[in-house]
Length: 181
View 1 (cartoon, rainbow, N blue to C red):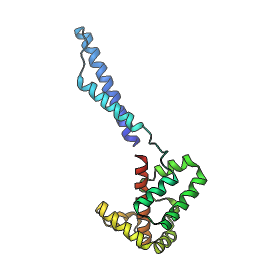
View 2: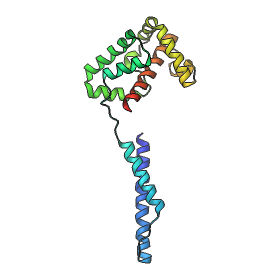
View 3: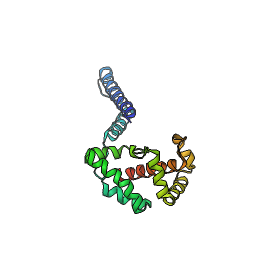
View 4: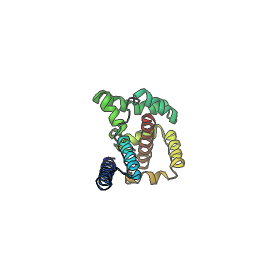
């Protein structure tokens, strides 16, 4: 994201300086100011994009209650929600609301560290296998990729663990994106 921000910012400055240069040269040469509409429109567009990219997302919607509501909407059952919510509650109490919101807002299809342990994931699968399998099928339909293709980064781990990790990281990231909009 920062590379694009720099790229657009530099181009906005180049277009502005080119716009000013053309206007000044026409004034020196002809005694009247002329300018390129193209450079003006490009500068305005690039400046708008630069400001839009710099805008920080509103994290105030990221609360445990809103996350819980979204997990209900996704189709998680109460006990699975409680398992995930207990991890989120511990992180919230450890880091505080603002750091929790920043962390949750930056998940971006990564798995919360608390679920990296394979034994924890297998235990979750064994307790909620029907929910996990149902969510895996939904994710396969949504992405048009098999669960194996979606968990290539987890090859070498237990199949049950991979499925749980896929469901948790994908659904929490979807929830995060919904709450940011």
